[in-house]
Length: 240
Image 1 (cartoon, rainbow, N blue to C red):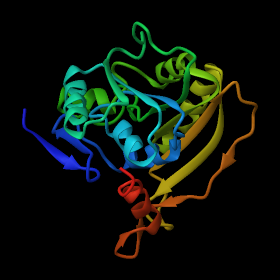
Image 2: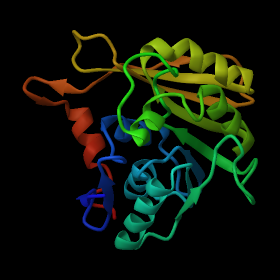
Image 3: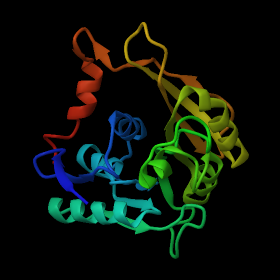
Image 4: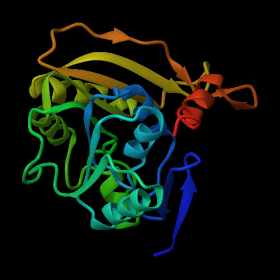
């Protein structure tokens, strides 16, 4: 297994491999969730741990639990934590369908998940097992994610997820089926002329029906990244 470290800030580095790496959607979801300093957070299906590390960089919440069923992903995160000397992220190798002993049930202010986007058997499957698990609903589906989120969140706490536009109805239904009310959605597209390729959705445990549609986020402007995306990428670099 070949691994390398990518720099997120002056102090924070992340261990990546071909099996467990990250993309733009992780930056967008971390920024969308925007935990407060006093918050307890749990990131489900954390992979290499990019979302917790970005949160440490930009928001510095009180505590982040980072859960993944794949031991290699958790080992990568442990290496990142050690190299970066981080003390508020706890890596946990466990199944989100069963959670884990001493899980902070009903204690989390924020739960995040960048879930598998494709229903199992839908689309072309990735060849690598780790990529299959990350991209296809093999070991968990969106209802499992929302059920786990509902168990972890305190009343009024928020679940923040991202997914492909074709899965929007599935995600909204899964949230509502588990007592989480969709409250805010933001679509993401490459340019103003393109259809969205991603949406960000926030739901509140025990919330009342009322959902805001936020201004669309554009990835590119002219020949480069948009100012908003550059601000998201750079958030927290000078704070760590």
